[in-house]
Amino acid sequence: MRRPRLGWYYGAGMQFVRLLLAGVFGGYPSLQIILEYWGEVVPLYLDWLASLGQAAKLQRSIADYFRSNRYAPTPY
Image (cartoon, rainbow, N blue to C red; front, side, top):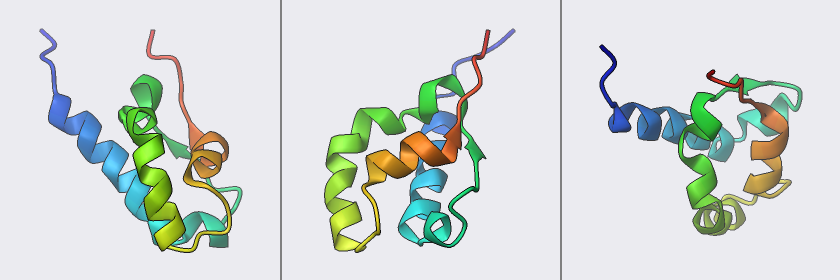
């Protein structure tokens, strides 16, 4: 039986954001991270994360990194 694991989705999404803010995708622009289930809740926070991207002085917007550096397979 599958049980809901809300913490997993937030944890996986936050790891993606940490990699992004650390500049990993700037150094490896073709790197793809698998985020299942429609992006592990990151899309819900893209507007809020935009200010973090500006503070981190990223080369591109967080939404752009999210679109180009994640692979989201369909879970079903």
